[in-house]
Each structure stands twice: as structure tokens, then as C-alpha cells.
Length: 307
Image 1 (cartoon, rainbow, N blue to C red):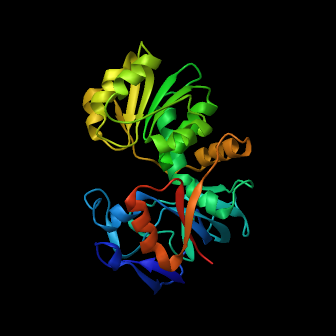
Image 2 (tube, rainbow, N blue to C red):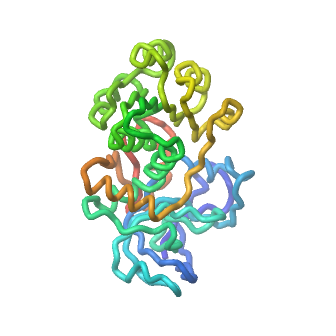
């Protein structure tokens, strides 16, 4: 099968289009013919060796954790699916090796869900990691209808999902972004869109004088602002800054979870969660997609298409 691989850590030039064996399908797994694979910053951070202290890598590595495609073959004991099913997944495994930037990938059924009919393969591939991160963070923070929620970096991939999910719960959402993204934040359900940086604390306090109930940090480096606007009984979490643990917050890392993907599918089907794809790239242009992701000015998700 065709796959993008790298055989050592490095920058984009280490990426190569190579021929790899189709992976074996173990018990409780499905072999998925990849139609599209989402791009996330963690993909190029892993490639650069930035998470080597956290996860073992076995070279050659096929990068990519998000996938949408069609079930090609099933392993033993997989009654949840049938060949031909359209599926999607956050397909992270315990080691960095057999990812989704390839014609085929194996996915444990505990991570695999039926693709929402309302989404294209490209949109579905863009949802799992970002959507699950947002969903799990808000679940862990016990977000509810009466809450006022501050989301740092609401315009990013995770932030866009978090704004919509929190709004779907009935919470009042305050989200930060650069001014050119404020209209988009409001279209996603944010009651208030604020500029990040200087003056943020005062702006949030003007909206919520008693402090906000929840703060979700999706960017890092905002702990002082979070603590300055948090209500005395408020909760906070970060996906980017472990120092929140020193101040009673939670540090989160997204987990694969098929049942929670089904919950996201329900929000999609109800028209409460949309997925914006900014650009697609063919498999041989993964390096270009990484460069665009690294630039940090993409409005929506980047997706690799596999034909």
C-alpha cells in the first residue's frame, strides 16, 4: 500500500511516499480503507521528536491519528461492524508506528464509530481528535446549562468544537481569538468573542463580574488570566499547560473512545456541530499540509485525501 513514512525524527524533508505492507488485522480490530485523514499539530510534533519522552516510536513511522474511510476487513470478534461500513476514528495507538496517512490502517473497534451521514469523508476525518478533546474536556469539567464558560483560543480546531459543544449544552460561551475570527466564533455559538492578551481579564470581568464557572485553556501561557477570572467555585483545565495542576486544574490528553464519537455524531445529526475543512491535500503533499498547520493561520481543519 502507498503510505507516507519517516524513518527518523526530523523536519518535513524526512517525509517520504513509500510502499508498505498492508497491516495485519488483529482480534477486535478493523482494517479501514482510508478515504481521508485529518491533520493535527501533534502529527508534526511527533515527527520532530517532541513527544519521544512520552511515546515510543517504531520506525518507519506512518503518521496520522484521525481517519475516515470504509471497513475493508474485520478481525476476530468484531460484531459491531461489517465490511463496507463507513466509519471514522481517532486511531491513536499505544506506540507511534502505523498511522492513518496511508491507504489502509487498522483501528481497534473501541475507537471506531460509524461516520455521520451528514459529513463527507473529509469532514469526518477532521472531527475525531479535535472533537473528542473538546467533548472530553467539557465532560471532565462537568459543563452544564447554567455555566459561563471561557475558552482560550476558540478559533482553533479544538476551540471551534468546544464552542459549539458548550453552546449545545446551553452554556454561555466566552471565547478568545484575534478580531478577524470574532464573527466566526459568534456563528459557532459564542455569546461573546474577545481579543486575547492585554485587557482580557477586564473584558471577561465586565461580562461575568462574579467570575466564570469554567475555563478551558487550549493554547497555554494563560494561567494567570484564567485564575484572575475564575469564580471561587470554578473549574479549569488545559490541554497545553501542565502547570494547571499546581492551581487545582486538570491537565488533559484526549483518549480514543467510540461511544463519545457517537455522541459527537448525534450533535452533527442534530445540526449542533459543524466541521469546517479549510483545505485538502493529496497523500504525496503531507509536507505541505504540515507547513500550513505549523503556520497557525488556518481557519478550519486540514485534511489528507487518499484515493
